[in-house]
Length: 211
Image (cartoon, rainbow, N blue to C red; front, side, top):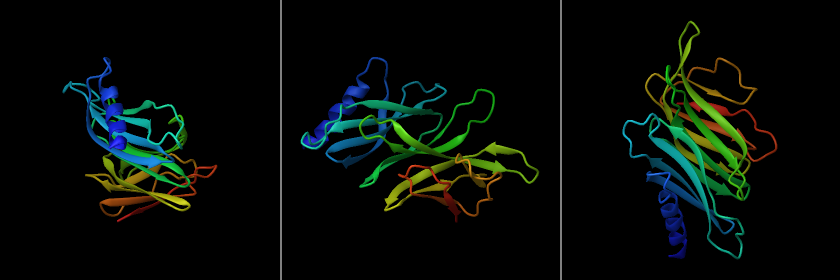
């Protein structure tokens, strides 16, 4: 009961801030070394806002005997469409993922999926991998195109993100420099991105499989 209460108090404190009038519409939580970590999607009360949704991350002490962090909340990103979120922990570390749509005033907003290796004490990012859904034409131009996160899984030595390709999305690009352009055309409506040694010193290019 105390564990649930800790998170509930933290969420209430976040929403009670006079600068926000947002509602938590989805959340996921993990416990790691006596600390609790919750990733949340919040929805603003203004239906005409350019970015109605946001993603936040919150830490809390679950077991004072093993967790000595200072509880905090960080805002990660704003989004035009409702984000999809995931969080996972293992002996190697703590990771989160979320997909969202950027706001762009005079063009199409990019559709992105970000995966963070987190510093558990500060909630800062040790490294960030980024995937982008695109539509590639046969003549070269490309446009942002929707895709979304489904789930995040940690294995010994690797991290996997699974997701959906929506509508006209026919390719996924990565922010890791070694990834070539253009990316291979996607086949099917689902994808898996596999990052080897995600918690290692250097972020490796993902292996992306579509089906």
